[in-house]
Length: 338
Image (cartoon, rainbow, N blue to C red; front, side, top):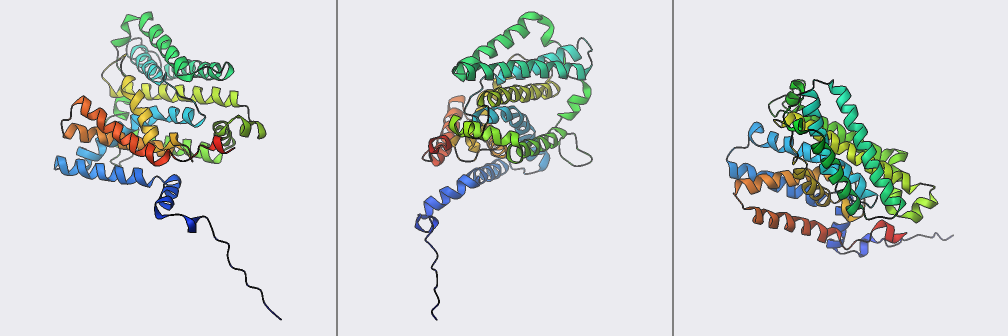
């Protein structure tokens, strides 16, 4: 009696070079982003000569939390294949309405929050529906919507810039506040919970699967019975809502209303998504954007420590984005494989 022995079939991994294997691992895990973040934090700590929590980590996490929340919606929109340049306007809407209606008119904060949510969901959802229904360029539509939202807010009332956020919101966004005795600013703890919730929705729910299918391409979505128009509408509505949330939180962090507050989070938010790796194909998710937000924020600290000019700062940001794009750029997008 003879026995047959089977030799294992050669796998694709065996034929790959070390660089290709590393690139494959990077697509599954954001190793490069983690290395960059650790290196930047260590650099800032050494350059400042003080590595204490209050003087280094707390301000980085605080500023990254605002950027991460503002970039959360952009992540969803990019995952479906769109782009949202109206985020800055909805940040302004949340900021101005809270500082004016709560600070000046003494409205109930809950009522103002609902008003902000309604404006954001309606405006963002309409942009997404419009882009998908008529195959319009998202960049143009969202820029137009941004102009409309800010124009209506600023033109309707000149007193919008005179108020301030409620006291509890100022404490919530204060760097020196703690969370149930832990030395973590409440806004940072909130960001962690939000990141966990978004991650669960994206990776563990039918809604998240529909979003990934819509981003993979119309063919994949149609085969799965997914309405891409509804997904686009929902993604843009969520993007605007999350931007409005960031604006509401910034009302507590800032001293008053600011029509330019959103500009500080539009392109840095997009950079956070790109640097995190979500925009480049493969498996995108919000945790990568959180890493990107931490990297962008820490890089701003590096620029500040070295007293770099605005032009030099642009070069640094551009070089970082090119590095990440070069790493992911050769991989075919999922929609190109279907």
